[in-house]
Image (cartoon, rainbow, N blue to C red; front, side):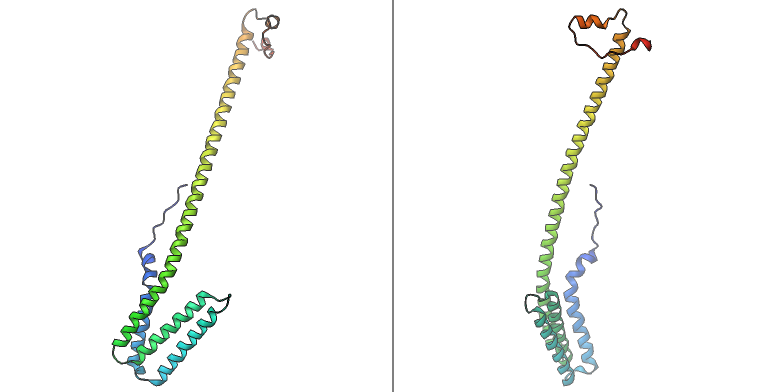
Length: 202
């Protein structure tokens, strides 16, 4: 029942928590680099990013329709649409005010959506740990009962072996007594013991 306890590395613990901020920050940085390389006030680039963002949003809407809708695919498409919109505005606008405002807004929305999945994951993990603990306790109880039963059987076997050894010793001792007559015991009404031909051995 001794199981190895694996401590999770701090990076594995905090990386999922930092992922939304890293994603929106990466989009903002790349958009500002794009802005510095000619995207500022470029109508063609703005139209391109708007079309891509609307296309991703439409794909997310289509993926979420109906009973067979895929929530993961829809969420990915909507996230891509938001990222493209943020990149388009940050690349088109001059200055940092509007891009930073949109970055804060996008980061807050990303954390709001991620928190829901984190809560679900935590509930499932806690439920799984409880089921594992309950199964472990049940198995430990069964093992204890089986160990007690096996110990009792071993003690019964030892007691029987000791009794058989004492009985054999008594028969040997009885047969070795001078003038022992088994028929006299039977005439006296005592229970007859198993007859052994002990005289041949002595």
